[in-house]
Amino acid sequence: MDRRTTDKHAEPAGNRRGFLKRLWQILGIVALAELLWFIISLLRPSKEIHKSRPAETLRVIGSVEDFPAGSVTPDRVNRLYIVREEDGGFMALSLTCPHLGCSVLWNEESRQFDCPCHSSAFDRRGIVLSSPAPRPLDYLPVIIEEGKVKVNTGSITKRKRFEPNQVTYAL
Amino acid sequence: MTDHSATKKRDKSRFGLILHLHPRKVRESTLRFTLTFGLGGMAAMLMVIQVITGLLLKFHYEPSPENAYNSILNLQESLLFGKMLRNIHHWSAIAFVWIAFLHMLRVAFTGACRPPRDVTWITGAALLLLVVLSNFTGYLLPWDQLSYWAVTVATSLLSYIPLAGEAIRKLFLGGADVGQATLTNFFNLHTGVIPLLIISLMLWHFWRIRRAGGIIVAEKDKESPMVDTRPHLINREFVVAVTLLAVIFIISSLFDAPLRGRANPAFSPNPAKAPWYFMGLQELLIHFHPLFAVFVLPVTVLAAVVWMPYVKSTDKNQGIWFLSHAGIRAAKMSAITGALCTIIFIAISGILPDPEVLLPGVPPILTTGLVPFLIMAATMWLFMKSLKRRWSLNRPEMIQSVIVLLVVSYAVLTVTGIFFRGEGMNLVWPWNL
Image (tube, rainbow over the protein chains, first blue to last red):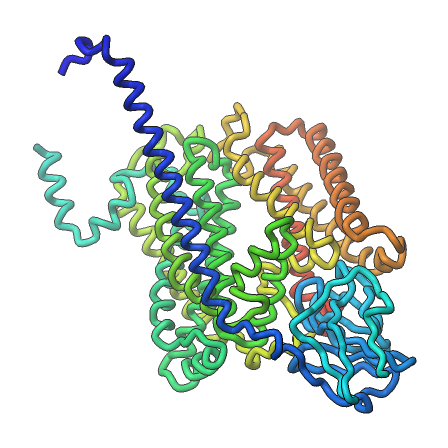
């Protein structure tokens, strides 16, 4: 076909072609977005299988007498430390270093928590003594009922500093 | 007519497909071993080794936290050559990262990344990233103390990416901690997604090399004669591939791939170290705020890599190692400066007390983030200015000096992390480790 003969119609035809082309491109992008959304949603749901219900996250750690004043006791199963203040108050601190997720170790000699990965250090209440940790150790709410120390392992709480309401007292 | 009969003759070749990756004739000067050191070919060979050994390992591996560790033990202890198979896969994986990285440096130092080789350069960089990612996802699979904690640390790095960090980390892990979902994700990435991506990108990479007319040719060699690919190039490639295979076999029969105790989420080993290629990053993390160590610095480096081919330049020094005499001198100077400064920096920050003690109350994002970053950038800028004045360097030579400086610094950080960090990540001598 000789293109020159259709010159007069070239412009509207070009416009229509251009419009259809753009429509295809937009549809293509929409299809890609849908595919991406589908893949991301595939990655998510199966991982919820192991999520436990809130009732199961309240764990009994031990009796009040098990923790002498001024002691720091690890509970490796629930991945936390029970800290007993000198005045008898209880604190539960997460074992996980807020820097990069290693398990911190209690050092009885220097009375501090040490992280084996990047040498962060924390005092008894989990406050940063030495960087690179960007914030104190996370704490977990402690409940004391009938002489038992219970911790809600489902609510690990981030904090910026130590506050008295993070400590629980036996009544 | 002669053309026709030549085609017919070639069609009889059983390796016609592989030969198609090459042009029929190559320039003689590009065959010189010291121009390329055969690094690209070695990387391709390592991919072949990895696919074969990986597929064999897959017959015996079980991707579940309960049985993964046992399946590795079983493979090593009760299977003929099972340990050897794992060793080959392990040492080839390490060699892969090394060779791919050296290949990239070779290309950079012979000025071979500018158009028409820009796409080759960028796909190559993507390939290197994929190789590291493949290495890292494979690292978790044995489910021992080494892999569990290395992956815990490395994925925690992701949570420092601004805004989307925590979401990206959870998507990777499939949950809050490293567990079954993580193993499922990593296994699929390691044995499916990443290898497919690598193979596709490799083909694109090869095709772009052909389109650019093969390996870079120096100006003085432009008149060098063309020779037949077969046997001149093919024979050389064969020798390199077989030698590499022999070296890998020897190393694998002498040294075993490490396997520690079964993963225990309650106890981090002391010290807990990342995979060796991330040790430089981990060392950086001891000194820098995570936002800078895992986000600002890597994004800057990545952007620089993509931008590199498009730097305007008029020089004709492509295809020559380190570009020019001034280039060599500047590169040496940068290497020495980078090594010395990094060592001094590590030593000083080991002696000085932590910023919380020196400047209590100042947020760590300033004391270990912005301020050191700005000081570092300013020092580098001044150093580069003095280099430029001294040898009147052109742009590619300047960029080359920056690369040398950064690579040497990262190498020092890596060596420090691997050999000079003992219990609690404190500085020790290697013989006290």
